[in-house]
Image 1 (cartoon, rainbow, N blue to C red):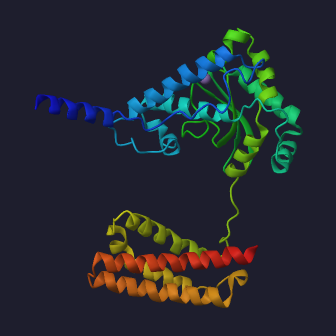
Image 2: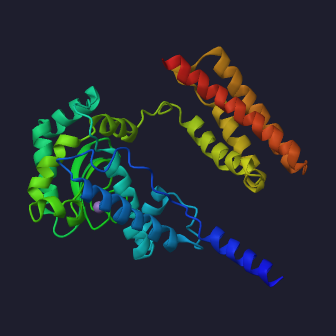
Amino acid sequence: MKNIKLLVATLLVTLTASAQFTQKALPYAYNALEPFVDAQTMEIHYSKHHAAYVKNLNTALAGTADEKLSLNEIFVKISTMPAAVRNNGGGHYNHELFWSVLTPEKNTKMSAELEKAINETFGSLDVLKEKLNAAGASRFGSGWAWLVVTKEGKLVVTSTPNQDNPLMDIAEVKGTPIFGIDVWEHAYYLKYQNKRGDYLSALWNVVNWTEVSKRYKAAMPKPDTFAAWPEIKTFHKVMSQTFHPSEEGNLQPIKERSAEMAEKANALKMAKIPAQFNKKEIVAAVNKLAKDSKALDKLVKAKASDEKITKALNGLHDTFHTIVGLCTHDEE
Ligand code: MN3
């Protein structure tokens, strides 16, 4: 009996200590970036420094209310969190990005979009390199130099101290990093000693421009399809705040907001549909959305079973996506 208790206790400890964040495999061998980054530095950097950030991050989050958050969700409120989460969460994210934007492959290609944006913003790629080298060289102590896309879609060079990054709410310049350079001494000291500038210059030989381009595309703000149709955006907000909880079995939001949803659907029906979306099928689907929203509100008021409410909400969600599908399809 004592043994079983011990076993259960061990299992529980193992479960609660189970890692939330894990280190991705390095996409190349430790010696792959030679002679620009030496194998010993890569091995220590990846298997000791980065690994420690991941382990310490998991320890810092274990058993807290924030345990289930993504790194992005953590970064937007990092100012309210313990230093261990800030240092190790940043440490994990920053290194994962760093490994991915380096490659032993020669001549990876920059996308035409990124090339155009770099030329328009900085004048040329050489000027961008100078600016990033300067940001890295002038960062006092340890930190990172970054190329970020702001929420307006602009390219900016910046740097952060320690393991901070531009996704954090405390960052001076905020945005999505698409390229970053580790300027901690642990990233270069074995090979370059105090010559941080030489390390920075060498690193340009192993940049993965394909990956940076991919990150640029993903970070750019998407065009707002429904800018001219605010009523559908208002409806969508209520839909997503009630439907997504229902997918996890929580019907409280829809029970509280069914009248509001019916009202937004009716407002959508009464509003002028922008010319580019004013098609027979779309009008029909909007009318159905208004009718079904009203029916769902009646079900809720009549205290219908959860099963019936869920079914009605699923149907409404399908109709909504039919409208979105018709609108985006017609735009192509
Ligand atoms: Mn590092």
